[in-house]
Image 1 (cartoon, rainbow, N blue to C red):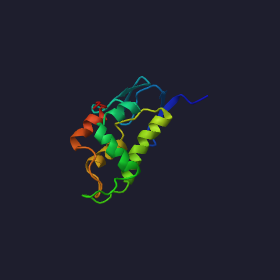
Image 2 (tube, one colour):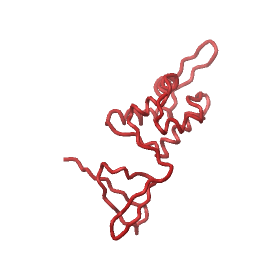
Image 3 (tube, rainbow, N blue to C red):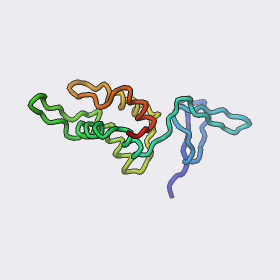
Image 4 (spheres, rainbow, N blue to C red):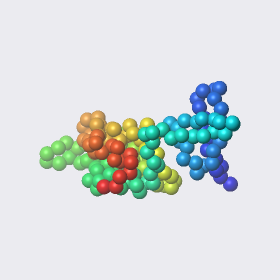
Length: 147
């Protein structure tokens, strides 16, 4: 039998720990107000809904997906006009997060700082890696808006 609960806790050692049902939407950044011993959780105003791996995948355009996969795996070979661009470790890590969500049939949480930083890196990577997305695309991808 698998554990079907999620523990929500604070780094503050004096804070109270609560256990909520696994299907609960409580996540990073939420606040908790306890009234008569009953916790009530509130989402932050900026929270994006969790995404299925397919929603996350389709939030990238076909051209963005092709470039993202190439930079995550093999890099981009040299051409007559440009030098070869090697695989990018940060892009590979972001792509691995997506692939792990697919493999484990897990949702993707666009509110995680690591995912947001990964998308920001796609918009402004370290040379010689070219940008995969425009920075204006980040909120669209986080919201799972299909392209």
